[in-house]
Length: 78
Image (cartoon, rainbow, N blue to C red; front, side, top):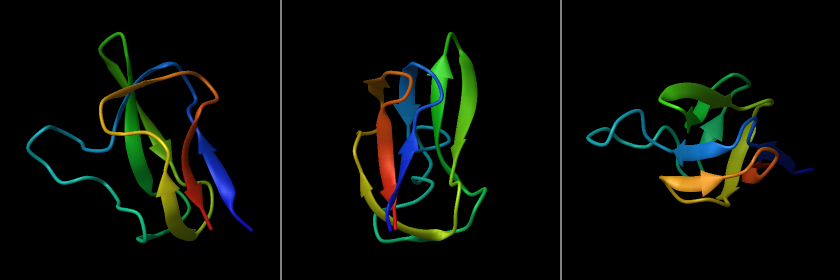
């Protein structure tokens, strides 16, 4: 069963820790509960978005540096 990863806050979603680094995870990657999937920036503060279960990243629903809303689906883990 697939689980949705939702944004905890409105802001800008980043799939990388910094512009010159690789993304945290890609579609098809295995993740463990607590693994960082990305960051949400709100007023120059960064909040980690973490996997809430073990599984595989099925799909990212937002692109790097996209504006997102609180509760918006970021990714699906199966």
